[in-house]
Image (cartoon, rainbow, N blue to C red; front, side, top):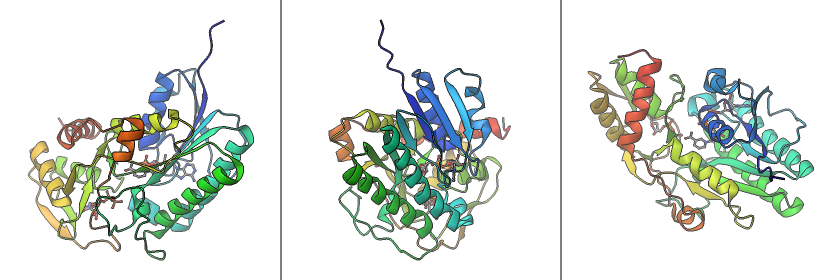
Length: 318
Ligand code: NAD
Ligand code: UDP
């Protein structure tokens, strides 16, 4: 009899930007995928093409509430990721991060599932160490506008490691650095989608501060590959591990590139820098390279071209 290697995999936040790409990948591999989402920032549109597949199921549920399921693996992605959205209802963001982690870890413990947490470079805050490696403990304001997300994600990491030590739950923790690509919502509020939408509609490009702050941008396909590799990796390597593209750009450079690639008539305008906006960010990915043999393949120019093509199509711009 042939061995059935297909697993029952829960993806929380599966209707969001990253979650929907992850669902695509897992459905394609033949697993039984349960996509759980409350559509806070995600949309049915992102996973509509999967709904007719026999190995895909959609559950509308808020992760701040418990849920009882039988699964083999859990990817815990549910949480708004754009500063605009996670600051809209900060108390809800904390509940999603912490209650969501508790509910998913409890589920993993009960059914002995392997569980991966989508953590973030925001655990490093406004980093005093550059580039950021996993051994850096960060520089986070505990009471600022970004704290609901930063501290929520930090506490979720704590819970993961406590369930690991105390209950032997089989965990993985990945720290995701700024990732972009098709299926970001046009009103997502993050910098890549904002600038592309502004450029394609020839509106002013809104650079916050003087644009000298840096970010490192990872294309979504590379990120999903790293996340799946981490889940499938050996049980004695649980992370945390950085996943991101170390190519570092100022926000002004990003604006100029997007204007160039879109052939836009947009002007760059400068607006106040939001509170606690990190001045620099770049992942040290040597651990991922060593342990997973993972490095990103898509450079910023190529990734931007693919993302611009997506936004042109959905905004109906020829
Ligand atoms: P996203 O906002 O597109 O997706 C988040 C999804 O979670 C959405 O579908 C949303 O509806 C869902 N969700 C939110 N609260 C929920 C709740 N209480 N119950 C159920 N579902 C809920 O964001 P994304 O970029 O796809 O991010 C996915 C995950 O990856 C997040 O946990 C985020 O913190 C993490 N992450 C992303 C990035 C990035 O650059 N994209 C960087 C670091 C970390
Ligand atoms: N940013 C900007 N204009 C925008 C949106 C964002 O200049 O319209 C800046 C923001 O201030 C930050 C960087 O771009 O310095 C990345 O912002 P984003 O919200 O994408 O993610 P963050 O890394 O700050 O969580």
